[in-house]
Length: 462
Image 1 (spheres, rainbow, N blue to C red):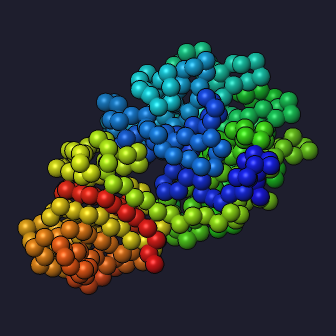
Image 2 (image 1 turned 120 degrees about the horizontal axis):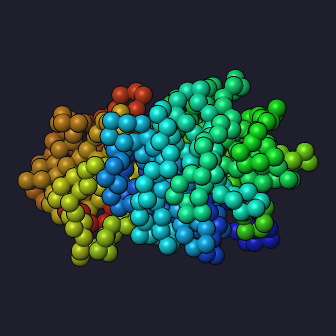
Image 3 (image 1 turned 180 degrees about the horizontal axis):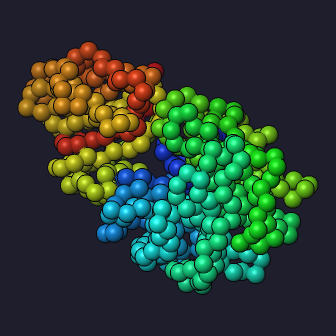
């Protein structure tokens, strides 16, 4: 079992350390703790920011952008977080209107912002993603990244002291060629080990079932190469209840050793929906390479994890970190008096369990929905004295209820959904018959809106 701080009471832990959908995590040790950023895809706020003191217990403390930069058109991927002399930078990729993704940089005086977009760094014709800023033994800065496309490789270049432009032409560091890589090399990070530079990268397919993601290593005398791949690749693959680990960042743990914050899917996530953030130990090997996890697989056992639950009483004047909405469709909301009013659009949260209950109090009207992969939606909606169970726009159940006070959805197996409603002074009433989503889809998120909402709770289905 990996010890985050040898001798500490909290030495043992279980993965995931950040549940939900926390893909491509990038982590920095600074200001007395750890900071991480992650992919947000098509959702806003863009690029969530997390804080931890020990790499194990994390909380979301903000995001990079409340609204997407004007030039960006979705696909907010792989933010590479770094800090130098008090200036924080995040190198991120996003799609342009009518174009492939570019790598841009945003900067701030502190990790909680405000962040200012500084423009493009790399825009290769086929697209550029997965940027990471690294340094050599002399303090010189470099950017490493992936050129998009199957068969494309990982590139690197010198980075200006400002962090806002490249000082050299991009150089190819490695490209896919081994069978296990399946035409993909991506998610790079570079660390110095034993007088050499070790490039940590991911290969295989990350995001479609069946996934085949794994982690490999290459080594060079300089950050920009030439690199030689490790003959024993991949060095880190699935196991212990997890599959397809990769795309992470190496960081010094509190005890002085190295740790790898990365993402993986649970074995029981059959459609590869939620890439959750995992932490694993990294040890140097006698021959100057690196060994990951427990025998090359993620940590999956140890301290029993607490049941995954979430509650929000909407007590503040702003939505708590973790609520999201489509980046190009911000909702119109108002908070006050312990109520969330959603006048237009929806707010949602990624939710990983396959068997769970979602419950929310409402003031006569409101909608509680499950968003599935592939764009499907199942919802229970109350207004004007009746409650409806909806599959998309199709009404699957009706219940007359003059004063609905709460709505509830039960989910089993990630796709079988039963809906319930409660009125003032009444118990729970089922709304229609349970609905089973088509095979090949799974719940991605829980959403609220439009309506007037009190406390919401998500918990395991007992």
